[in-house]
Amino acid sequence: MSNEKRGPLVMPATLEECASVMERLSFDCTNIRTQVEAAKANQRATGRYSDPMWFARATAALRWMSRDRQRLQEHMAKLRKASRAATETSRDKLLIEALRQHVSPEVFFRCVAEVTLQLPTYFVDSQPGGDA
Image (cartoon, rainbow, N blue to C red; front, side, top):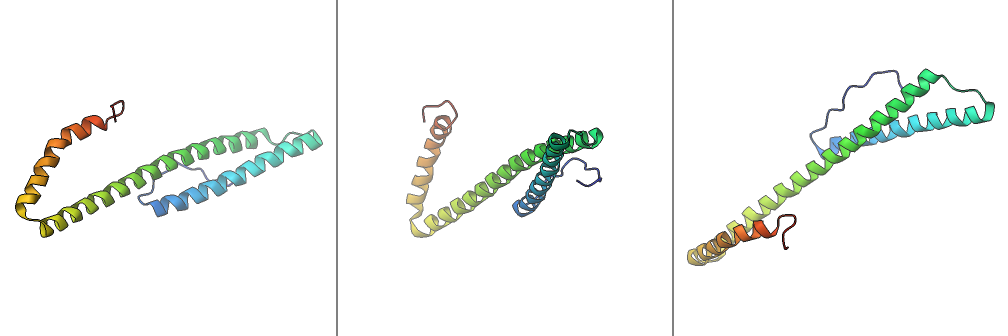
């Protein structure tokens, strides 16, 4: 465990950066956990306790890093969800463009009208606690 003080974890903007930070946090947590377990094993073997201040700092650092990992995991889930939503929006736009090119304007606008009538029902049915 290094003596550097860490501030609050700044959430990265991309999934690749998040993965890199997650890897570093996992490595650091494993390193600290190994040191704490070694100190506990040494105490059981020799009966002497490790430095209480070090032990307190190490366990506190482990708790904070674990919290940072959890926050980072949640942030990564939000980034993945946003990425999927953007992909679906792009796909929908491309599908609409293809339909405009391959069907007559009357058929296209009839489909648009039908979907418009179904949208309120779709959103009501897809709400949590709904019938869907």
